[in-house]
Length: 212
Ligand code: PRP
Image 1 (cartoon, protein in one colour):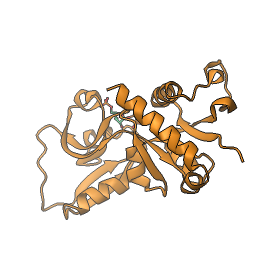
Image 2 (spheres, helix red, strand yellow):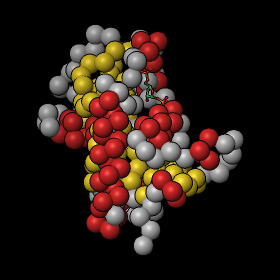
Image 3 (cartoon, helix red, strand yellow):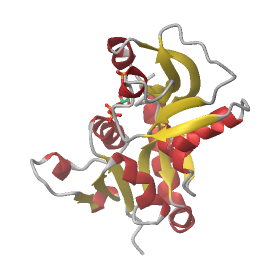
Image 4 (tube, helix red, strand yellow):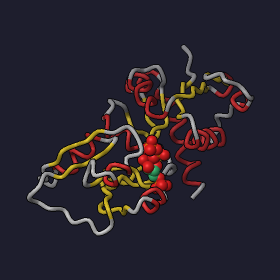
């Protein structure tokens, strides 16, 4: 049986960084650097096959076993709770999930708080833990617009550099969770390919430690 590890990488900057770590950790794939629209690249000799996947879909591929392992933001894991193993913190793609609002915002406990977000489960869990009644407004992007136009009081969103908030006269009010990229594995694949996936996890973890 093939012990090639199938790896779902998120298309984009984070995926490129994760690929660099994997390649440096002993899983190179020269073909993947060719100018190509292909989505699957294999290096059988190194025991690896890479797929480029839309970042928010990585956990779906891994949970359903179409990929053995994948690289995914902790935000996706917290939001969707996929049934996968979390193997390692890659310490990249670091940012914070925050509550943000207009500078000087004061919550009025007599009113239901209107919260705009792409992450309704995280927002709901966060405010449930504070027994704060909220009205979730689920948006798909440009979340910062919502409080500016009076659609919501606050937002729950990812803050990386803080530039988007600043340029829209908003500020972080509370931290919901620190976020970074994680290496995850399909649970069944982990049983079938234990040695190969463990070896990859250890090599990647060592490469990540070496970069610090
Ligand atoms: C993310 C996030 C913030 C921004 C934060 O948006 O939703 O808007 O990045 O980054 P910063 O703190 O460095 O400014 P993304 O670019 O993914 O777009 P969208 O959510 O509007 O689709």
